[in-house]
Length: 267
Image (cartoon, rainbow, N blue to C red; front, side, top):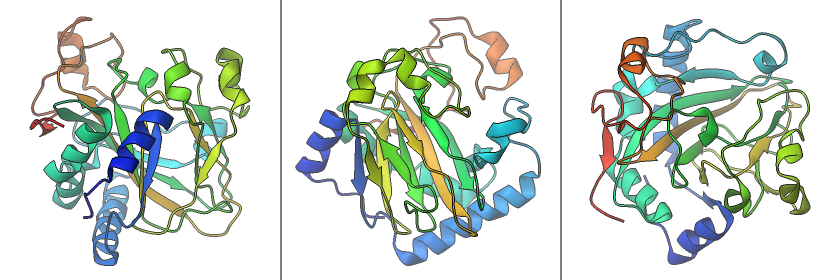
């Protein structure tokens, strides 16, 4: 794993809300992680959240055609866990956000199937069980991600405009801009990647992806992280029923089994 960030990458991320990081994984690491991810997808069948999480069902309609989504693979696969909970990766997250510690929120593989629908512009953090302006995700290309098969797109600076209002990922690509019209005044930036490249984006950075216009899958592995000390906002998201029912808004999310600390050594 290439876990060294330049000062320019850190300042770019803090300005724009996202940054690309080339050659994060070697060819051998891509092969290892991809095999583990696909094994998890096969083992999970129609289960969306692994390891005892919320009993989410596969969606119907338009969203079902956006991507195949399976979450919390780290809880059932030691290879995925080794990558997604790497302390060296955790240090990168803290450097980018300028915080002292990060916990894992959830990982997810996002596989845009052949001829898959585009992913509408959206924000991530409003979906989750905590609100933070310093949450972020890593997005790792395990196959080539291109303009043709649905690579990521970002709106620079949108994380500074966003609150916690959001939209679902629906058929209207631009619904988010009804809430945040100023975001539509900035040109989006595409993020084509080779296998092993990754990007980081803030949980309030507007992003989306195009349709997969090809006959092959676009396979990516992602993981979201929350700053240590984040508090419950009342939403279940992927939390197990029993844990969810034990929480009240304002409680610190500090369950070391469900959300272990990835790094706590300071930025």
